[in-house]
Image 1 (cartoon, rainbow, N blue to C red):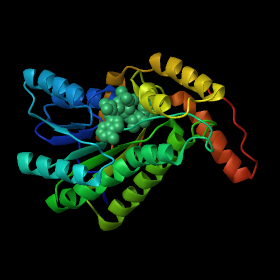
Image 2: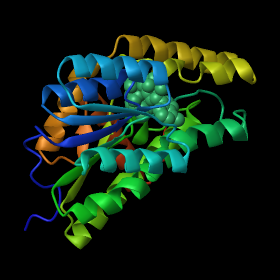
Image 3: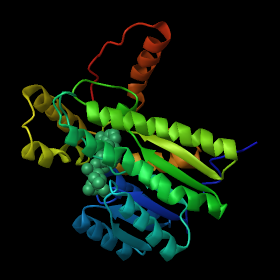
Image 4: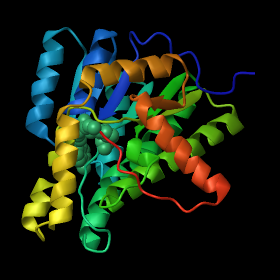
Length: 285
Ligand SMILES: NC(=O)c1ccc[n+]([C@@H]2O[C@H](COP(=O)([O-])OP(=O)(O)OC[C@H]3O[C@@H](n4cnc5c(N)ncnc54)[C@H](O)[C@@H]3O)[C@@H](O)[C@H]2O)c1
């Protein structure tokens, strides 16, 4: 019996809401959604970049709504949902994608830094679920939710505490939702996107905080430099978006962009099952 993750083969005419749509993976999802004939609700806190993307996609004939939104603020996500449902009447695909990244020793990043990243990366997705899922369930039509986690959602590394914690929680949230949708026989499916390096601006997202607060120590600077280089050389966002749409079509819960990190996931499982203490092996990104 098919209990969830239903019939998302045809995207044309369906409505997608994308957070973090103004850059990187989000804008690539928007471009692919437009190419698939979807109607789009684009949300980001960067109003200028959001407007520019909306203009580009409208020029290509897509039905697009741009809603400036900070996903860390529950009322703004609720307003985003109201606007989307008022305008298009339904929402079929929700991408909880907005995210930010900082580096630093867990005990040295301030409580405000921890709250900042968790409020965006984790609470942003939770705000999305709260505002959209009840109405998507009530539609009683097939729908799907994609939560963007990360390679870091499955593998911890030093100097990445707040980011890793937020992204592992997004994996747990997504698994929970999957079981919940199964248990109620919902027509909604869920996927968790765990990208490896994709060439976007993510490594710059904490720069303003680093400048405003304590300057990160040498180890954090080194980690950021390593991340910047790996991300700059990463997969094209359009390729990542294509894998996401294929994953939805395949009803895949796990959406990976890079196979080469799977041995790392296996090593983590082995550490758990064997009882051996984990040992960090720097992975090349
Ligand atoms: N690029 C990678 O290598 C990579 C790898 C793993 C996971 N990810 C995840 O992919 C997602 C997309 O990031 P990206 O790589 O495209 O980076 P990006 O910086 O290019 O895009 C992120 C977008 O999110 C927006 N955003 C940030 N905070 C927001 C907030 N509070 N409210 C609304 N919008 C906000 C930004 O303005 C930006 O437009 C993130 O969740 C990120 O953690 C990226």
